[in-house]
Length: 279
Image 1 (cartoon, rainbow, N blue to C red):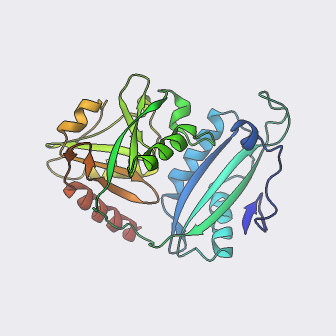
Image 2 (cartoon, helix red, strand yellow):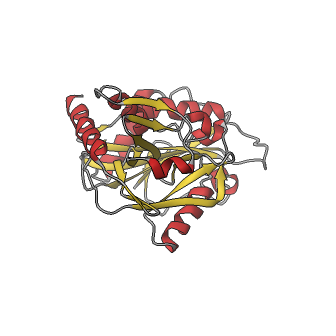
């Protein structure tokens, strides 16, 4: 089952060939984690989606409130029986009509949901190797910071990683600075300095990125900053990890010939789960 504009329908009754997200990538989306009947970081997801819709000049429906957003996601989660531990994606797309210039600025939306094995965040420090993907770049602009339905850099990068036996790849912007990973934001620890690229570099304005920044600033002895990371900095780092709202915090164990520890990532995962339990 999927939730299409508030109606639960069979997944065979899918979107038409005139869908603008299909034709032009004219859509934005949010992926959320559902745990014990609630959406984690609900307000952050809602306001990021509203911001994305404003940035691309979509007409936001008057009834699209925080409470409506929550109820519609949980509606399909319950129908799919994943309300205890699941992931859901809401995709918002402009209504059909026009070519590059839409003839209708109003939107429709669809929500899908699927199960997750764990309701909380587990720590996994098994071997996880990355390299830099150089075929295409992320542009340092506002559009790069939101989730749109045009993810060709991530798709081709994922294929490259698979073809080369890698678990993930790191993406560069046009200035050849490290921006993020294919599936999340990047953090780098060097000594007592924890760094993640600023949003102005073109990285996704990640929900888990925000949580990790907050938690890391509460740890004594760790200096947190949002600063530019060059590929040369990676070789000097003690620890690298990737964050996203579904997986949580994923340590990188190897970049080329450099191996990394994962102590801070483990500490942050523990703090993250404790924070969720208290909410």
